[in-house]
Image 1 (cartoon, helix red, strand yellow):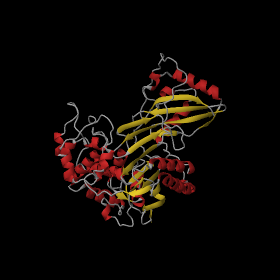
Image 2 (cartoon, helix red, strand yellow):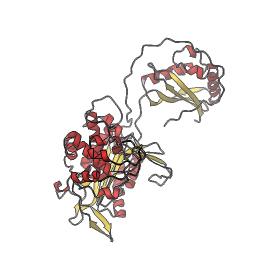
Image 3 (tube, one colour):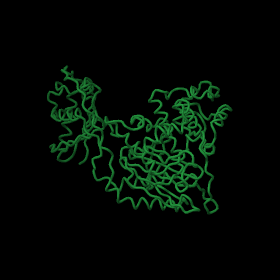
Image 4 (cartoon, rainbow, N blue to C red):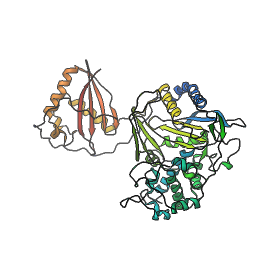
Length: 519
């Protein structure tokens, strides 16, 4: 994030010059240019990392007793590398491959929220509708306090409904019937918080979302998600019920106990499957990751996915604050604080380097999984293991760090908007003397009342004297369409010039800061 730098000379601006009214040019709307990757060799450079990545997953499997692991790397919407380690069926020694079908547990949650958003986009529900509009049994729900707001669909999607964290219990409800879910709600649900108050992970909330999808679409949530999301993406091997998976492709689940693998009983599909029931492969899931990658950046080309790109980006926002971990470390063990939140069925995090990652973990008896993408880098990783609650987050984080480092990956670069380029050129012509600046027509009405031209001239001329003759005007680095900075490169030092424009059309300079920086 670009800091707004203060002008170095702090002078009381009692003498404010009167700005001369100027005539405006005819407003125009420039064509938006989305951020782009400027490195054509990024995919090629990643190839050097693949043997290292494979070893990282192999080492993790051996160290943590994973019977089998499948993994994939998705770059710019393509599965560029994938592999498998160990076995999906220990007794029969069936190798784990990118085509093996693992239960992905809570990685299912974003499919459920995506289905809700699709129904929202079609005008069939609103996220702030009370959930009881679609689940009548909730009308008798006893809230924690008299002033509690009603639980909304959005609360269910963001783990903020006030239900208690329920991972151990919820995992065993997967095969419950619709009648079981109805009976559970009718019997009364205990609250840990009031709705909208705090993040608390709730599998039950996602079972309710499955019920809402059924009520609104007229189809079981499994059918609606399959027809509306899975099939359009070509995820043709993905299933909800394990008995429908070919035996040679099905990953069996295990736990490590008494120094040996003990097979876990596979759970059937049921009313709670919306929270964690999908069974899929790396090959199939990579198509879903590609869909999420394709939502970035915002742009104007054809929107051809099963759901709008803007709705996917909406999923990626941290709607509920989760945590601030000041003691967090990166995969190399170096301190790197991180803030986390929860979107719509998506975990969100931003680390000390400014890298934003979205994705989700998954864990059930017999399985553990995770996927994560760095939205501004176009890179993503998927990892599955067939061991109870196998934590794939640590190895996936290390894999992402390795890919970014070896591939020398950089975030997308935002092209300079025409109006930013224009204002920069006009500004440079006025420096350092500010001759006729008040009549130039490029500054907003607040600009000179905020700080007089005399004060601004003094600040800039002093900086010019410090850095010597300006030898080069650097490229403009945009933060967005209306804000950016550039360097004035002098003989002995540089001057960073930061400016931001108004919401008017045409946009005018409302803030302008200078600071000396070393060469």
